[in-house]
Length: 336
Ligand code: KG4
Ligand code: ZN
Image 1 (cartoon, rainbow, N blue to C red):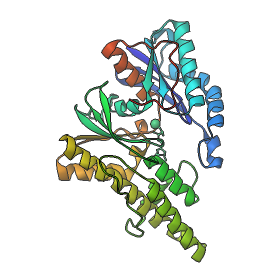
Image 2 (cartoon, rainbow, N blue to C red):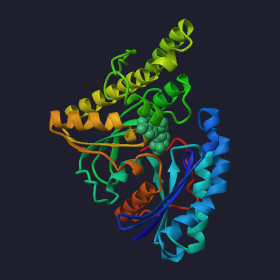
Image 3 (cartoon, rainbow, N blue to C red):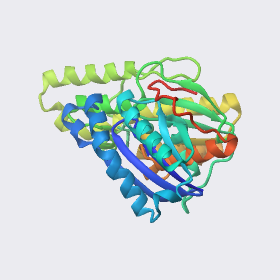
């Protein structure tokens, strides 16, 4: 089965072709326009998607060395995400499916992050069901109990900011450009994780909160900068290591709690923040300590990409032959 996946939920326009579970092409156009604004500007994002979508899909088909008539199904991100951005991808997918007379399958972006684990790759072990997935991105932070490809339940979620937002907003205070998560990761490598300590959230059950941590980081930096204008410059690596350490320890604590509660020792991570090198390392460490089977996606399938949309579309189509009605609309707050 050959699937074309289309992703346009935020600031990456992506198209991918998969055959079976193998990726033939996965083209991603990033939108650097947002850098100077320190975050994604929705109106600019949808305009950039409009400019990118046709060439990105064309390049995906060409690099996969197939013809568009070879495509069996077309899948696209229905949500969650920025409505204007989602509309570009969903309208394009509908028009193409209509013109080629192919089945159309809508996909939940957060479920697709999880299903990226099933993309075939030599280095990648596929998770065994049931497993718990810590799904951490720029907009979401969830613990998901995954029973099978199509049966998933959110058992914990953030009450305020997402983990990726905590990285990005902290980076902004440090004067780093958007998205700051990868830069914090980079500078943290040479920093001291114990140099600074920040407020720890007190949230019951498996939910998360990052807003108190964010305020605590901002207050600390503002106070120190008033005393010494070079504070950030002189402490950048230690600040990054300490901020990253705080965010990762919150995530790890909750996934361990979830494992105890559900008696599940198959643990996976997914979403943009799962590219974080310290989170990946800590997860391996707790895996060894607690006898978990740990599943970490290949780096390139952590952040937004259309290969994950294609694989999610394939499983949705195969399990219950679900074909999306053309009247089905994009949904900014889609959940499951
Ligand atoms: O999944 P994703 O690409 O887009 C959304 O669906 O939101 O996630 C983007 C988020 C951003 O907040 C970005 O800063 C974060 O993932 N991110 C990282 C790293 N790479 C991406 N955060 C920390 N360390 C990284 N290496
Ligand atoms: Zn995402």
